[in-house]
Length: 68
Image (cartoon, rainbow, N blue to C red; front, side, top):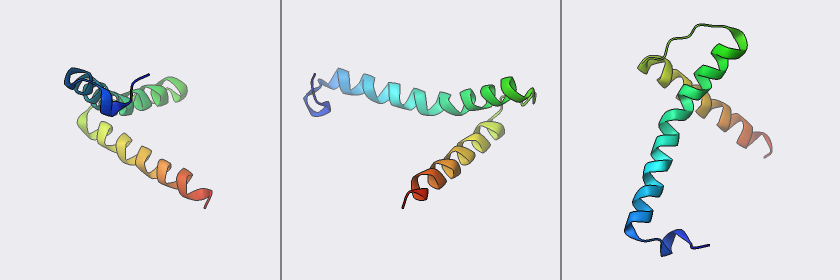
């Protein structure tokens, strides 16, 4: 398996596009999961997307600093 530094410019561009797409889609998947599990009827807007990003950042910080 090639390292990222060994990828062609097209491969690096595709990897960046995939990473950005996942970063954009993940908050929507988080909102979808909350809607499905708890029947909340949260809309898919920029405001709720931003709130999901902030909530995920907060939870990630709490989880990563808990072990220290």
